[in-house]
Image (cartoon, rainbow, N blue to C red; front, side, top):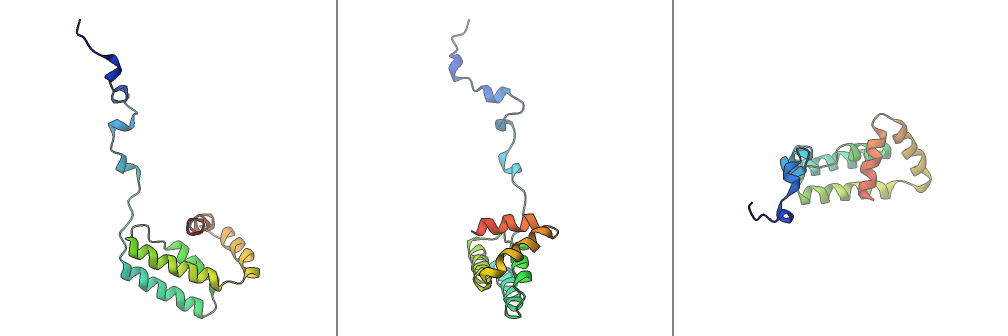
Length: 118
């Protein structure tokens, strides 16, 4: 009989459902890449809504278009836009606005994105 040290056998390779048998990058969703210029353009559109007094739609637009596929600069630009929106909302208006966003279509997902910025 061969002299095999059974403690050095990787048993995960024998399990068909083991993560060693498939590529782990396939687990993450593919998101389109977004340039910093596109995020800057979106930020300018959102700021126009904000200047017009439409803070709720400005917040919705920022949360629905988060740059998941962007580089670090794009994410920083979008973060600055979201912070600017949040700073412009009165404290007394925040709770009713978040309730309306939550009750709308896609609202819980938008509020999940907001929590990522907190």
